[in-house]
Image (tube, rainbow over all chains, first blue to last red; front, top):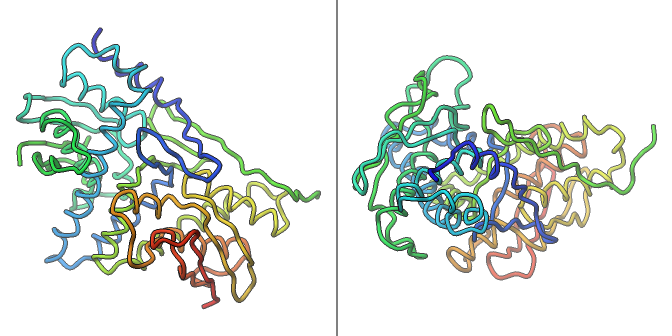
Length: 200
Length: 176
């Protein structure tokens, strides 16, 4: 059986994230929040939009890095979770390529981005397209000159590391072996966001 | 119109299959982990932008809470509104909040558990200073929305912190 994106999205999107008696949501070996997407966008966009030009790259890197670390640990949590074992694992034929395709289906189901891999050279390069993502919501009219999908870029680099940078390391020493560059963005007027991951 | 004294927050989760987006009580939401919360907090501290982090939380949650009570006019008593706001905080995974007191000039809020603090400690261990700017913004929003006060009316300051080793976090609130 090959990866059935539609079925994964259908089943994984139905999982409700409910808190325990202490108001804490634990899922996929991490603590989870379900905050308004506007909160994350607002902070990232205000931080970068008001930044002096000479500090912009450093601030953008910090936003990207937050998602990179998050994607590495949460991504590992997802692909070792009971939900993954029940829904996605039975579809996997090729490791780690099918794992990667499945991970993007889950990422879509979680509401981060309607995204999929369009090119994959194992351990070398991955190209991801996102046809809708919440980070693009920062623009309501016109085109921004600034590519702003820091979260999706960071997570994409992390997913490549989980696939090709050796065993998962809880200390995250593998983080940084791959880098992702966003080359197109809905927020910039493109029809989709495009993300290219290569060795760092 | 009858008033509701003991309240339970609404949980209406909807996944839009066309856009692949999640809505909680009509608000577009997104799942993120404690690594992300911790790194955003650290980023704000490093960049000298903790006020921005708090401001974003205040603006967003002021709208969320105000909209919630607009859609539920039967919840009219302050006690019920406080209960709902604390339940909402828990529902989105931020932790367990208790309002010790709320007034037009001041207030005090405690957290018995906290995603931000537990996540920070899980990732980096104890902190040498309070780190929960997100919750400070939530508290300012809650005071504004529940007391019908203008934006930026209150200042919440974390004076005891779970991340620093305290059994609970304590926030002092004062009118600006």
